[in-house]
Image 1 (cartoon, rainbow, N blue to C red):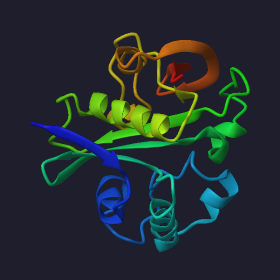
Image 2 (cartoon, rainbow, N blue to C red):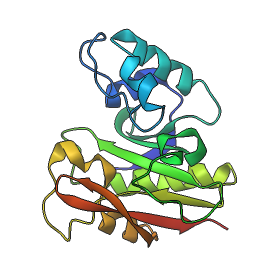
Image 3 (cartoon, one colour):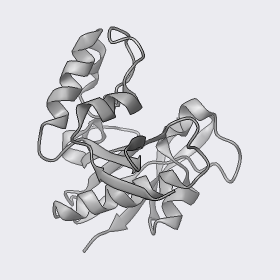
Image 4 (cartoon, rainbow, N blue to C red):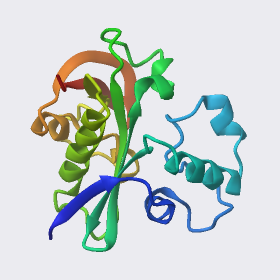
Length: 190
C-alpha cells in the first residue's frame, strides 16, 4: 500500500470521509471545532455539507486526504488555530501567542484502519501547515497510556501517535474525552 497525502480540495472525497450516508443527516462533517459553536448548532441537514463545500474551495483547504491509489482512505482536519474554536476554547490552553495551526481530527475509513494511515495523515497535516509558513502545529490527543480508545472518540489521536511524529507535550488541558485526559502536543516548524 503506497499512501499519498494531498490537500483536501476535492469535496466528494472529503464527503466520503466525514459526510453522512444521507445528505440531510446532522453529522459532524468535521465542523465541531472548525466553526463557532452557535453556528455549528444552527446548521441543519444539507447546510453542513454546503458549508464544507465552501471551505474546501478556500485557501488554505480545511485539511488533508490520504489516498491508496485512487481510493480516498483518510482525512485529517488542520487549519490555523485562529480560525477554529481552539482560539477561544477555555479547556485547551494557549502556550504562547504564536500563530500556530491545529490538527484536531484524524479519520481512517473502515477496512483501512491499523495500517499506519493515521501516521501518514499527521505527517501530511504537518507538511500542509509548514507549506503555509506556520511556526508550529498543535494537536490535542488523549493521553490513554496504551489503553483502548473507543473508535467514535479516537478521532483526536493518541499521545503516542503525536510523539511518533515528533510532537512533544507542551501543556496539560482541562479536557477529557472517553475518560482520558487530553494533552496539548506541539511540533515547532521553524
